[in-house]
Length: 191
Image (cartoon, rainbow, N blue to C red; front, top):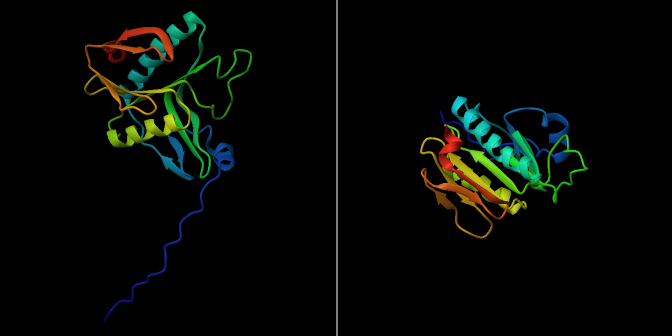
């Protein structure tokens, strides 16, 4: 006996709006909104957390000492696309006082495009996915994205309209376009 097959399209859930995402998921960890679709992310683990904390501490100390702006962590939502809406969770981000003046409070929900985003590769991340995410940040107005890769203790720096620049494990990480004077041995991020 033959079985009938259907050619009818499989129904998909309607796309989530920015307002729906912010109302229901802004305080939830491990989620992002990608082109209107809610994406749940696996918990990245201890090494990821340690490298994120190191990066945040190193950058924050520099930023605070020079009074340059704010450093945020813990998957701070950044709107990267309008319709359909996308909100990505940056591991670490820096927002200068020129983008968010000192006398204004940091938004409770998503922030506008930071100057710098740092993403740390977790064990389940594919490099292609992280590269695509970096370019998404850049398209949304982020000036520089740094991808830290714990397993090789290397990095890649993404800037608009250029190829990623690799940073070797024994090199210094410098970011003159967003943090003038910042120069830190890359290994410090992984210690």
